Length: 464
Image 1 (cartoon, rainbow, N blue to C red):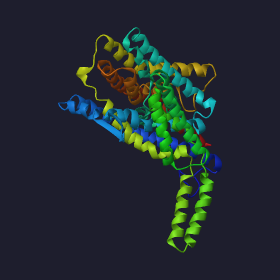
Image 2 (cartoon, rainbow, N blue to C red):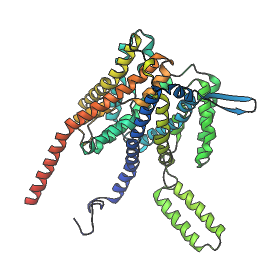
Image 3 (cartoon, rainbow, N blue to C red):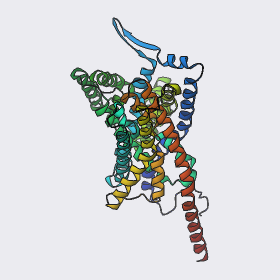
Image 4 (cartoon, helix red, strand yellow):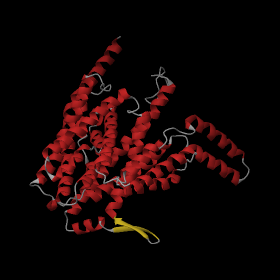
């Protein structure tokens, strides 16, 4: 190693622009995975707290809290809904907005930007959605609970990444990226399922309002409006139009997220040039007003150094991961055990959800991935083995957030919904335990072998 170099110093043969581009692509991914890992712990605590609270002597207070009416009024007009509704149909719009941002970013510059790289997570996600849905539909055929076929299709990326994190260095970075890409496609699939199968009858007036909001967003982008808060009003129009039009209002977040620009105005070089100019002018200024003008311009330059899609995701992801998602879990994971039904239709719901998550997910992901690789449509990423793909399939069986969300749309309030929620919690926990045990058992020998090969190569190199 050269004098003064350390593990953070690039090797002399590396190409600077290529390294900078790689860092630009990987930095948001690394931050995303780090936040999801920490969020999974908070989600787990929120779900456990909800479950304990809903089965404690204070369970009436748990139910009453989420049924508390909260309303908005404008003169003679009033709009009142329960606290639970505002969380599920209001705050979750921001969750879906961040999902839309992530999908947009991945399509532009991530794993989904190249069809060759996207082929494996695309086919894996397709298998991971179809097989669980078929298992549930087969076990609930001819029953009124058949509408819940979409429940076991979803993957909770926060919990899935959290479980992979517990396996530590046994999991290669490429496997985490594969899981992230698969989960993004999985989220997109769940969004399409909600839009086409779990939305009510379409109302023309609402759809026109939503279209007006979308045109407002596009129009403001066209004239160069960069202030994020300026887009709140057209976004509210998209949300209100979706609600009135029969589409689930949370999809408004996805729509606006997908419309967010993916290119920076100034970029890195432009920011450095403008910042240097503003700092120089600031130093030469003789009064506070002139200095404040340069500081304002410097602030604008810093905002435009990165693309809006990355800036918004950076700012909102923490609020979603550590605020909205745990609050959603607290409001929806409180299953009163006595209200769940385990006979008749309840047996079909319970078995359909659990088997769909624990068995359907890994079977669908591994089988369609193997078929895609076998046909030459896709290839395994470097450093990823079929054992690793199996681990991804197992952790993808952790449904939680999106599964609970779909359950609330698919099943009416009552015993079947409570049974489905309990099945989601139980199935997700079982999938996590099986994934951890399997990963601990199967990935360690491969790592040891890899270490042995590295040591052997190092010894050979020394001998030469």
